[in-house]
Length: 607
Image 1 (cartoon, rainbow, N blue to C red):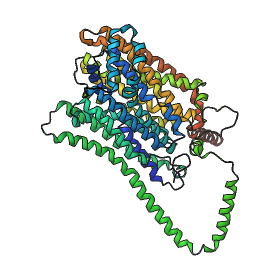
Image 2: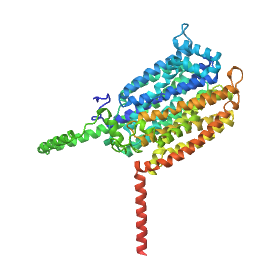
Image 3: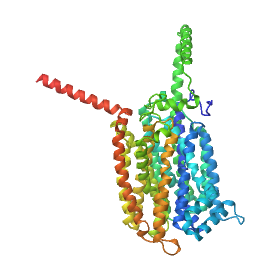
Image 4: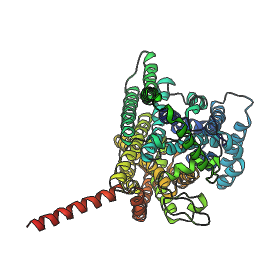
């Protein structure tokens, strides 16, 4: 049954549906990544551009991938399946256009290819006006080929993340860790597909990106819906199911890592082996569906037992039916006297209230922990502190992701497939682990989640120094550390933003903070890394040696230091909010203090 805003009514929803929403969301997130490193060199070769120009393409890609403010605004107005449909369309059009550009299959090229070639010829001729010319001449090419394809991820991400955050509003850290973790693991999934199923074919990968994610989204969209399940909450049972899915996810991550290493080091004679490796990976993705299935069987059995008990009691209670009907009519009359609430916002409003948000008061400004609109959040110091901490934390990771192929080339590594897998798997582990660890400490000690962002940035300094001064053999270790610390930033930022500014307008606020990523890409990847690389490059726009990215990662080390200090300031400021939202720890400490004082008093009186 549909509600007026296009969503689904939750009156007849069963508890297992909530877990089916999470499993379907995992499937969508698992194929939502943009494995740019695998086709960036192909684009660079086909268009004959330098590293600075390639990094500007990466900036446009990042702007598309994280420009989700429109999706956030539309989330409260459209059902999740409509956002997923838009994302599927964008993926097909965007990556399909990139495939047309890279494949050069058409003698009469479409306007995308014509505009791109014209643009690059003009840029090479008038290099001093490169930025202005790119903005003027690349508008339509970037819109179709580079911006719209990755922009599909923002529609996928907003639809599934906000829906699951509201469905599991009491386990925000766990849900954020799972869903953001699979975004990180998605690159490892594409790595295995690229090496085994596609046989290192970047054009085949682009074609797969244009077809695969839309198909997965269209299959899964019917399951992604809001479920009002406040009365279904059972923390112990919920945690056990999260742990089960967590173990499956870790097993999948380890399998992907081992399979990628085997593909890199072992040459298989049989063509059947790559297909088996891909099939086992898909089996891992299907197994989480047994969680809602088993939950449904338990729930259905309980419903049958309750129905049997009710049937056995029906005869003695027949005389009481009339009184129950009168009480039911009185309850309906009392409900009819309540003030009307717009149905389009009703579910989001009460789901936000259930997690500690305070009733909105007309004419008053919200306080931290209540529901903020974007314009209200923009004037808060905590919002900009969170924005800057996230900005500093994702900077080194974005530079590494956008330039890993060139970093490997500079160190003399022709195939960075294994390093991409390291980065992706540890990115996933960082996101997943940070969700569980932060959830534990926020409940047991009311510790602000932003503390973990600062700790991760302190550890990230070691990865920056390994990239700056390391050797070829240490590149894998640097990628693993970078991926782990990079992943932590995402799974901490998401629940922190929802706890400080509420769930009602979370889609818009979350996507605005995400816009720091394309800004990072522009400042650190295109302008800093790209310009330094071209400055050090030799003939053919190719740079060799650690000097290509050394200065870049030293600057990023300073950025991590700034982010660490800002995270300490933010954590100190928001500690009172967490004591209010998670009062269990304070009550426990107070009870222990009272017990200790009582025991001391009894001991003194006995003495």
